[in-house]
Length: 194
Image 1 (cartoon, rainbow, N blue to C red):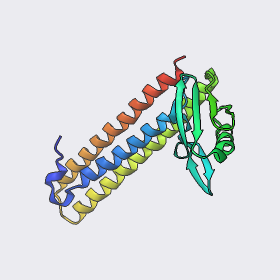
Image 2: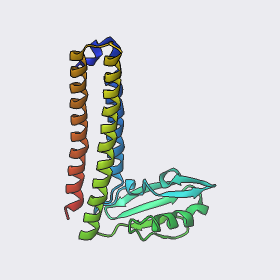
Image 3: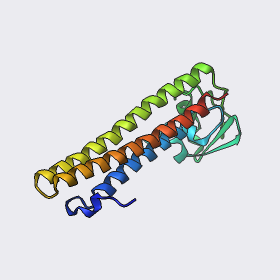
């Protein structure tokens, strides 16, 4: 769909900029969803776990090969043997309920079936992440509306153009919020399904 704002010289690029920022927010939410634990093992379950690598907090996937050979097991093979203990400790203390074990070279992370309480807790946590992302999208909308208001104040666009631009920004906002809500609903269903 062509943007009506694109035809307003004072607002050229504003719509595309807002859309790009909102898309980035949706992509960030999608990445958050990948790290949420379901009943199946996924390499993304360790995405938010960081390990001390020469004084720098580094994601596990950047210091080890992470694979899922079975539906209920994650294997972590560090690039450096000296990291085995640190990675195991980071996974154990991550608060995700994992109980990793290692043989000196490879860390095995069995994925226990999720309890009903754990599933509900995961959905509740996700709902908070959803709200944060919806707020981010609304803040981007506010930035766009401020830009439109400023252009109208400076008489760069007419009152009708201002109204049209604000409606277009609201439509974009509604569309992007619906996208994150749909992603949330799909993940919620996946997490709550036994």
